[in-house]
Picture (cartoon, rainbow, N blue to C red):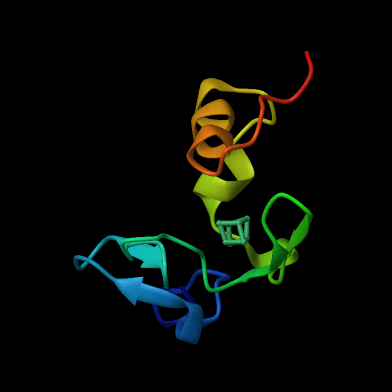
Length: 80
Ligand code: SF4
């Protein structure tokens, strides 16, 4: 997050510990990142794509984590 020298705008992140932050909204009962725009399952985009945090950069389309995230929203896995 910006306050810690990172690229993510401070208003979109929440400090969890002195060394850890999470995107605002991702700890809600029905999680949704505050930077996500659009409608899940129809069309979405990252509102801070150029400044997104490392975990977002590291997630590979079609990976197990991607498949699990899609399943949580009732979406089929990406085609191989
Ligand atoms: S890629 Fe963007 S919208 Fe998706 S979780 Fe990361 S910051 Fe949020």
